[in-house]
Each structure stands twice: as C-alpha cells, then as structure tokens.
Length: 523
Image (cartoon, helix red, strand yellow):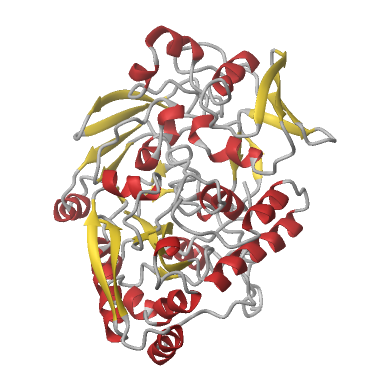
C-alpha cells in the first residue's frame, strides 16, 4: 500500500515482548541443545463473537460503502491488491501488475479458479464490470482512470490519463474497488445489494437484523486454501458501554470493536489485550478569508501555543489520544523534522496575540462535531480562555457538520473542526483533503504551492522523492498555520486471550482490515 503509518498499540507490543525467544543461555555440561520454539498451529472451528456500538447501514455494495460502514465489509470482499503489515502491495485477486513505460496503463494478471458467493466466476469481465461503474460517464470515483480493457479472460488493462502513483493504493484500499458479483447485481440492483454483500471473500452473509445483529458463515469455496479457520462470525450491536463490558467479561463475546476510552482503560488495567491504531485526525480550521483575526498567521499560531495537548491527551484522553503538531503523524516518514512542535507556551501565545494587535484576546465561534470527544474540546476551550481567547463551542450533528466539512458552508469568520480519517498513505490524504480543489474544507485558505507539489508527488515514481515532497507540503501547512492540529484519536479493540490473529489495523491503518480471514480461536 504505501509506507505504513504506525500502530501505536499495546497489543502489538505485548505480542512482541511475549513472543518465544531462544536467545543464548549459560552453557551447561551435558545440557541438550535448546529446542526450537514450537510453532502453534491454528485451530479450526468456532464462532467469533464481536460487540459493536452501532449497526451498519450500507455495507454490501462496494461503491456505496462509506464511513463507519467500511468496518463491517472486509470479510465479504477482496481487492485486486492487498497491503501487508510492511506497507507494501501484495497480490490478492490480481497475481501481478505491470505499469507501462509511459505510466498510462496498468495491466493486471488475475487469479484463476475464484468464484463469487453466488457461484459465478471471477474473471477479467467481472473486473471490468466493477471498475466501469467507477469511471465516467458514471461518477468518477477512480479519478484518472479513462477506461478498462479486457485483454483475455484473466488479464485486464486499466488506462490512465497520466501516471499516478496513488492508483495502486486505490485498488488496495478504496472499498469502492472491491469486487461484487456482476450477475447478482444485474439481477437485484444496487439498492438490494447495499445490505446483501456477494463478493469473493472468506465469509458470506447468513443474516442481518438492523440495530441488532449480523451473522456471517464460512465461505466453503474460498480461494485461499485452508482459510478461513472460523466457522462464522457473529456481530452484535450493543450501544451501552457498561453492557458491552459485562457481556465481554462474562464470556458472551470475544471482542469489543471501537470500544470507548473509559471501557478500554479499565479492561487494559485488568489485563485484557488492546489493539489500537491512529483514528481520526482532529484539528481546528479557519475561515481566514472573512476574519480579521484568523487572516493573521500569528493568531493561528498563538492558538496552538495556548493548548497543552500532552496534558489533555494524558488526562481526558487517558493516554489513548496522540498530540499532533503537523498534518501527518510524527512517526510517519513524511513528518518534517525541521518544523519544531508548537508545544504549550501560554506566554508565547500572549506575545503572539499582542504582536498581532490583540493583547486582550478576542472571541470566535467554533463548530464542532458533536461526537468528536466533548471532554477534549472543553479542555481546549479552557486553555484558550487562559490567554484571552474565547472559543464559543457550537456542537453540530453529522448532517450539519457535513455541510461545513464537505459543503464548505460556514458562518463567516468562524472556525470548525477539521476531522478526517488517518491514512497510511499521506499523499492520498493530502490529495483528497488539502489541495485547493478538494471537496473538503473549501472555506480554508491553502498555502501557495501546495497544489503543484501534490501534483508533482503523484506523478513521481521515486518513493524517496515523494517522501521529500510530502515533507515540503507538511512544512507549508506548518509555516502558514493553515489549521491547528490537535490530536489523533485511537481506534481501539479489546480482545480476550482466546482470539488469535484478528487481522485488524494492518500497516497501522484503521481502515485497512482483514478481520476474520486468518483469525482463529484458541480452545
């Protein structure tokens, strides 16, 4: 996929620390040679029971799978490519891929002997049928793809306007690119398919009761021989955190997905493993065009200096939130080391405000998504108040927030939370959210030079050069203080010790899940 972001996870640390180790011991006379650690063989069978807080809505038809519904779809589908924990592309439904010398075509050699859940064959025509729905004259989900050609029954060529190093990332991570049975889609239509996944994945849908449960059963004809190990997966919708914890601790479930911070913290203290990945990138963005305050970089910088992110992350965040000082994670290769973090310095914040002409501070309205961590938002409000900046918090629901985030409709001179998923491929994130023509945060003024750098990075085949350009882009946003980064939230899963190889959060990307494919339950 890309250069991996980081899984800052207790679970992975525990796995590493507790792995069998056959290091040198003290030699003893007549002592036998240390035995090689025994490889534990996965056990087959069993139903994996997972608790979730919300029920999916449209999880079955790839082009309409968006947002949190993506969490439920991986067991049903396959991509052309996959991404390993090393962040590199690997074969999935495509055995190989070759980019032409001019970069304007990618030829995929497809895996043979694969069938969809309805028994129909997966082949080049099926790939073309799926991808044609993502390019003009249909909605252009795959920007830059002009056409798809069937070369033979198991070879397909994807034609591009120009070379774009993000295209392979799309084929490995964009759920719209998952393969759905053309036969079933033609028979039943997209609306029916929205809750009836018919892919090539390791599990098939057995039953779905909205707001209650989803049952998956093992695909007996799955193309990866010997997989899956599980007989099935039961996903139970239980909104109440206390009920979740009681069910989990009593053995009624093996895992809680997207567990609340307080629940995760308590269960971690009791010895249950956690799996985590960076979740949403949370920041504050500004309508700088229509604000006398926010039009000045010094003011935007002062806001960041005024906030003690570490204290908030350790306090209300209980150590599960990560402070952010650039538009990328500090653990990413794209992080620019020449940009010193604007850490908590209230005196410097006051000085910046005075130099900008506001020694007594000012007031502004901030529109924040009502589900984005109110405790943290109130703490930020309190820190700003200490330097004379009055932030009036206006919580809005998802629909209202979307008119701001995606529609660009914000009260003149106001600020809003700039929330977005975390991607292991930062260039994809920059292209999707931070270029001038992006359909997000249209009220936000981009620094000069961002668009040309993004375009240049996308057309570059040298990944080391792409990293340097990503660092330059990050520095442009840092210097301009275009937005004030706050935190990365965490996607947290708590599991019991019987669950092995969950498949969540591959390469540290909370959207890159293969859960269930190789999961097994220790009896």
